Image 1 (tube, rainbow, N blue to C red):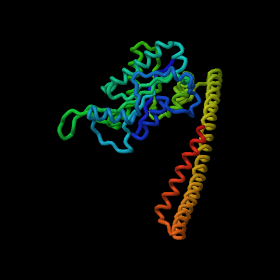
Image 2: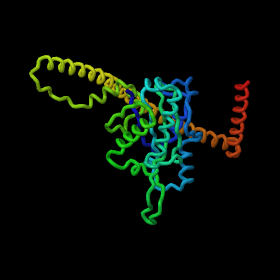
Image 3: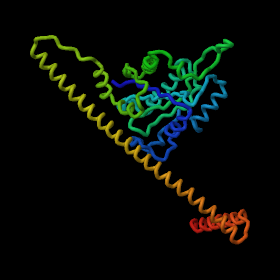
Length: 330
């Protein structure tokens, strides 16, 4: 059995153009090796957005007179990653896969009475190992103005996700909505998964790995029996589980160690660049000083106006650059 998977991420206004370039495949190169750029032509939009997300955000905000205090550090946009496992999509086929994502899109429109107008973009990626939907929306709450008591639409990520079990409720409703639409799925993980990174989410969409995670959440109970056969079988089960956990730990440790090493290398590169920049800056300032003094002494030596001298030199440099450009383009 496959799982109905929905995950949420929150972004500030400064993050929007970064996710725009990723979701709409505007980048030239991607660090994610799972992306097959040849298959990017198969990606499609349920709700297209052909302008940067920050621009569309401002357009929607103005058009619908959205209220709410927005700071640079405020989360103003959310993104659902909606998917299942690879086997599920292979089994249901292309047409049903498209219906799956279109149904998920309709769910988001209706969930908490959001409204389709507050969805910025809804993009399906078919160029990675597992098909998935990136749905970017403005977390709008329909409330009352405290001063006038009039109905308003307000941007508030905090209020939209208000409540201890807000993500559990999202997963419950999503599972119910999708199964009622005819998709044979299991309920996704019941624990809080609001902050699972996208790379990790894509890694756990495999059914067997999720099954292992669900089972590993259960606390081991001591087997209270004198039956040797039962104890022996339970011992084998525990050893097998320990081996599995050891393998998982080893994989995570390798990834963690590799990440730490990359961070240290980046820190060193950054330090080296700062030193290099400082040297270049000092050299540049010294050259400016030398050039200024050169103009000054030449002007005095030949009794020639310094401003005119600078203009003659500047015109010569411009002319030479144009000539060099012509040579390069031949």
